[in-house]
Image (cartoon, rainbow, N blue to C red; front, side):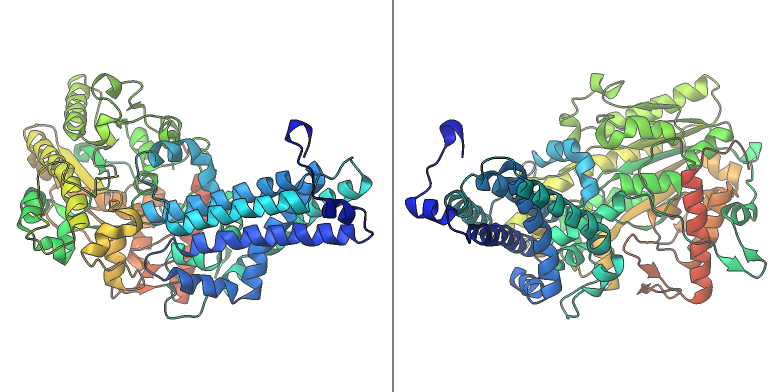
Length: 634
């Protein structure tokens, strides 16, 4: 090395450095060090899934020369480039090894905590991730400690066999440029090649192509992480569909559905609340048998009996809350980052003279909601910084804030109506019940008793602690409906969960209740992805709209929830919502994994020719609406 950190190479290394074949020696050791680091990342990734043996996944990657090469190549090139840049073996080893092992570790914990893998776009949320990670228990397994120990041993070897290369030479410059050039070429040719990525899917009984975590891990962490860079690129709109009269533009598609105004006499207030990590645990047979669980959900089930109800089939599990949130507000089944005013259902309400507002008892910078909510059309939105911070500590809000949220939503509605501000569209996001929940002791009352339930203690602890907060949430929402019933102004209430809750690292709490998380089956898909929704109306709204708001609303993706609200209100709605209404009749499920639902309610990854053509129309119109400025009318 250099300076006070200089390490004198053994005498034999001095002789090696003077030999004519030293460049070959150095090249072999550099390559070996890169291969070694790439191999260390594989077992950590393979061990991140509890549903499949890590050894099986590791064997899959090691058994495929293509997969193995795609995981090792970037590490080797990175190490070569770093050595040519610094001239120091130890520095090159750290420059290559630290990010590779960090990616493997973060992916391991992300899958353990949330069930989804690490993508390159997640790096944009590093501050949010750091904030949330500090609340969870990150348990380093024996395998992780062994990997880190081997990595340190490798560093010691490199310090000996690759002493400092002094002086900036033409050889080093050429080596650096060559490594960078190869990486530059490899990214589009190999790592962003979707056909190659799909071709390397395992053909095995254990492999579930509808599990993004299994697909990711089965390809190796390094390869999959680099492949996810494709999500950062601007996504082209789907190819225009050619009909009998020629190619249809998105304008032509949307022109078939002229925007319709809400008749003055049918304008009612709409109050929506997305409930953090809210699900109905009685959907799991083992928990439905527990008297304490039944008692907590009894009030919710009674409210469902007074409402239009069904299941949202979300894209997410235990995190990623804005996916469900923004799908409801925009109707988009997929979207890129919102970086400017973007058409949404909030803007439609604004065009119809509604006062658009809402709140969240958390920080506005989280998911950049303070900016994006303006882009989506909200006139006013309250966060910790501009309202809720005076009412509840943002940390305490994670455990207890739904009663405060409900009070503020109700009082704001009454105040706006009292000021003659016109009808109100209010949408808020709760924070109470955000994980993690203690899994090694009871923090509150015992709802599921380990001694009598027949369930593992960890499952009893984690779900009892979760249910303590859920009980408060249900009572707050039932109380809100009762207060809205007393209003003379017609009001519709929409409640829904964003995703299933976290229940222990590696879904250990769910495993203890024998949850079926095999998402290739209908039961497993529902148990993993479904959350409840309900659409309730007070008596004034029922009278104004001529609808009792009771019954089965169907099961569908979150992007169709606002469509169902408009259906129940008898509103035709904006152009895109009318198109969305027809899209839902084709398939009520537009999952991010490319999964649909056929007319018999079965999962499928294919649609017939006519339905595929309509889906292409829908996606083309969707991309157009997202990429263009807000229309001032249709």
